Length: 479
Image (cartoon, rainbow, N blue to C red):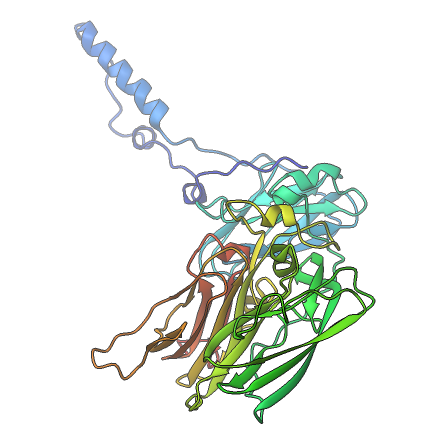
């Protein structure tokens, strides 16, 4: 793995150090010190010498960039900074040699990019800075040196086609899966954007639904493909929306193309575990019938042993059970499921060993199955319209603190406990805490045009993909 550039002090490096004030004063040609009298006491001479020595040592050093002989480059590498990360990452070039880096800062704060070898490009928001780097066959690593940015994962690597270092997987700067040896694959297909719109409630009172357990490859983040296990081919599985009192007749099909047995467990049901929830082998099917007796946002998932692996590998979904009287009309309804990925090798299932760790350390924490998808594709909202979000934390192991930056939840229904916007004391909520398998309904409005981040307020997970964006109006609060 290419050695990473050493993190620096960050903002202090943005300015070339000035000369020491005394040096500047002497260079003016005025007030030059007079020769020291031969009668000056020895102790005073020693003191003056010590002061001069300390001053010289304490003065910021003036650095000069080494001269580089200009020579042609093999092309331009486009690199963008966002809050907080680089895009694209990793970067692959066709062959080793000198390249021009065009570094653009699309974030909301100052970022830099520091390459092994010394080049540092600093860009303010909206600014593009260029510089040349030499990319060896072993690859070239880079990072943001501002405090906290490197630790939050703002690192990257440039690789040379056909020369990716075999030991790159052991370095946690090559991607979000240091312990598993997984690095991003530039040839991975793009992810499929999941529509976050909540479905309408199913009509009627008896619902016959087929769920097929499909094992297939899926891009879970840019550059990362896993062999996931799904309900109906998607992660999360389909959102099912009914009303209290409805009957659901679920036809669970495990196709003969599957490798594993699978099952399903609806948290909104009241049936014996060893009845409808039993596993079926590839090529088999069964019917799971239950009645929705309680309102809420509920989880369903595969319960086949080890259930941890089946959930962590994509087999989960949301059931919305509306109260008997239904829900009041709003302008927009969305469904967001938070979950975790513990990456296995490219194209293989997730790592059960990583998911089993006593202190969970997911490689990715995501909304609706894909890291950063709603950051890269903000969800449009009309300013002032009333928004309802059905939220589920599918886990399997990490808590959620669901929060939308820039607004307040005036309505929260969490596990049957309700905060309503007409409460007499005017209470609101800033975040909704959800343990794995807990769900909630939140409502809010956007007061002005702009961008409103969607996060779990456990910020150690935001840099791992648990971030999205609402765009109210045109997204510009100043226009």
